Image (cartoon, rainbow, N blue to C red; front, side, top):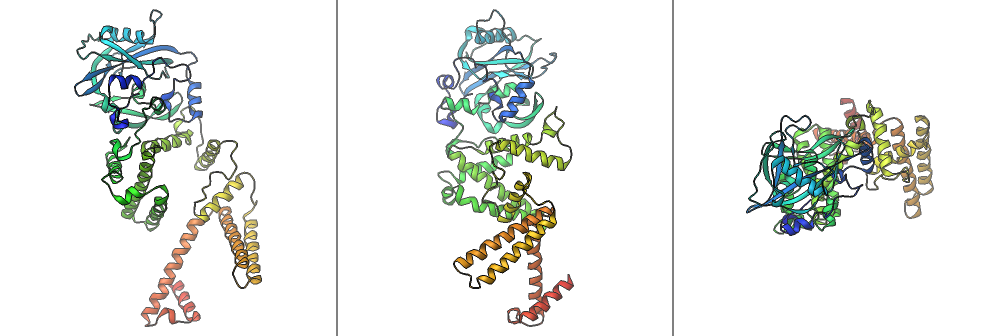
Length: 498
């Protein structure tokens, strides 16, 4: 809709607000911009589920200029209304045959509902139309209202009229995510709580600016990093604090080390923190897990802050994206009319099918498997993708035979090239790689998590080796001075004690 000086350096004036609006109502096809976070296939489903014919309607979005800044005039519907009792909205209704255009229809409705005189309202512009599940296509018309306005409320329609500072509405930190039904789907939307009231539905979405519309007028989402004001759309106060800390660290008076970082420079730390989370889980160390999850969350916030400063995306976009993805990939939970999968196994199949649809028909079977993924895990993913299109052994025994075949080739290469250097080293290197890939594929066929199995084997080796060192120390000998046969006897002794 409109932005403020924290976003672009442009102060909120009548001129800047007019520049952020459309001079005419939206043409057909631009009536669902408020679902900007939904994927095209969801938009198509929503549109198909809505009534075929739309009833034209208009609402007035009244802006009042106060000494403290602009405010939005909102109404609370009467409790006696059948469908909208108590709902926060704008004055508005159907466009009648005698209305010249949506602007004059909005003025007429505002006069009928709250007694606002048309002569006290100056035209500002239009927001994108909203196509509602009730079959109405609503045109929001924005107008500047004289500060000395007087009202005459129609009690059968309106219970109360109140003002909300425009700066409060534009502050994404005051928005709260929720799931609401749109046609036959449950979709993520943003509500705006204020003073014990909740601004939601079409009213909230009209007040929230579609990024594409803002960018078209030069009113972009905050992209100036630490100088841009409060961080966007936190779900919890604690998260808001973290976003503010990150913003400060990257600010002009922040930490030199943090300011110097880039996506690439902190990527190794992101991977490291993920491993430390896994380690805390494996050890059952819940206090450590809490700390490590915080470290990993900080990495997400760090990347999002760098992206926001570059004008790419911000943390709110990351959160909206994963929310939309989870809703999209769980149709059995969020699609009211769809049967969807029921068992965990069926859901896993559906998840992969939806991911494949998202990648597109032209994508190859192996597309989307990150090259930077740990090699053992990537081997599992690659072989699983290949198996999905039929390139796989029928039985696990055949995979075991392949492991034996690759091991024989490693032996043969090593025998041919006892001096592992140059081409000889490359030949052995290649055969060892084939052996490891075959072993990972065998683990997949046996439904064994190869990464977890190897991690457990590492832990077992470490435990037994430390046990050998302890036995040697107890007997007053240095472990490294023992012969291999003596070390093997200690190894067997440690195994027996387990």
